[in-house]
Picture 1: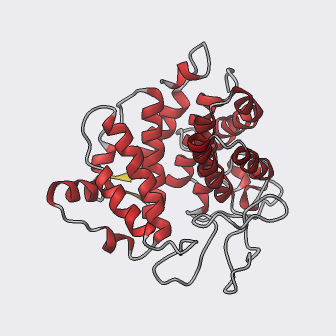
Picture 2 (picture 1 turned 60 degrees about the vertical axis):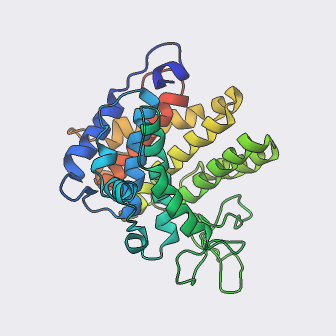
Amino acid sequence: MPVELEHCSGTLNLQPLADAHSSCLSHYFNVITGQYSGGAYWTDANAIENIHNLMLATGTDEWSSLGDNSYLGRTAILQADTGISLWSTILDGSYDDASWIIMALWKIADYKTARGPGQFGESANTIYSMVESAWDTFIWWSSAKDYKNSVQSSQLRNSQGLFNDGLTSTCANNGQTTWTYNQGVIAAGLGTLYAVTKDATLLTEAEVTLDAAIRPESCDNPAAKTATCNNDQQSFKGIFMKSLQYYLDRVNDPARTAKYAGFIHAQASGVYYYGTSASTDIGSVWYAPSQGGSVFSASSSSSGLAAHIVNAKYGPCSAL
């Protein structure tokens, strides 16, 4: 259902979403390589997923060629047309990157399937099988089998309700950074499990982590003026917001939506008023204008887009 009809009786202003993506596409996407400048396969996958998430939510086809023209999409089409899979070479044993690419390919497949036959599901399933083969009660970070982290292996929550980064060599919580995106991804997964099982205890556990994460963390902290986010980290807030959307999508509960509506709106408002430049690009800092140390990149622009999408779907029915 289109965004403007799903949550509110009136029509929401979707121009910030269009502006955010237009900036991301025109400034950062290389039509020759099919990649975003300064990014990596996994951050490209998130940007591509966000744009298809936008098109599915709004019913627009404005960026319908992106999936086919992206490097990931070209690789998927090659496999569908010829049976040649380059995924093992591209991923080079990274189960972490592979998992993000699966999400993007599934989202493209959802979009394509809604409009006719698509060529992306086969590649998503190929990569999923690669990751699944690494399961041994946890999933390894890579085929080197030298690290297990929380975004693959969701059993590392600390006493604050947040998931630390991974395991030590003795299989203990390593106490490392509680990255923003890990919290959202795990909550989205629990929401999906709830949709299948209807086990409400999963929602309780998900919201322990969501509630704990809704406070400044790491480079999101406005008090830490010297904090910087690298290109990977510029994606993290956006992944959290997208994951919160996916959680609410699956839960489909007005009371739970209302619980997070104010937070969602505050993030989108910050993106709109503080994070967005005069050229409609979106930076990494949402709490203050660019003198707060904002960095502008494909990853930061994609993150801001994710915040606008979830606000259009689940924020309060009010202007930014």
